[in-house]
Image (cartoon, rainbow, N blue to C red; front, side, top):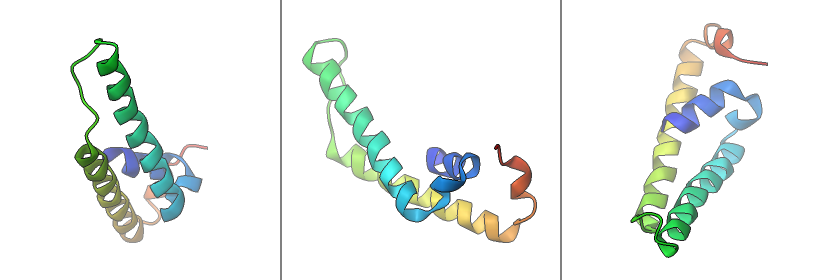
Length: 84
C-alpha cells in the first residue's frame, strides 16, 4: 500500500490507475520471482506464493484509492510534495 501511494505522489505519470496497476504487477512479480530464484539456489528460505502477489496488488489499489481521496481533499497541499 505505501508503494502505490508514494509512487503516485512522486511521479505524475504513475498517478493514472492503469500505469499504477502495471507498476504494481511488475514490482510484486519481481519480488516473488526473486524469492523463487533465491530458494532454488538455497540462498534463502522464501517461496513463490500467488497469495502474496494478489494481496500486494490489492494493497496497492488501496494505496491508490487513499491517494486519490487525499488528492481530492487537499488538492493544493499535495502539490507541495511533488518532486520534479
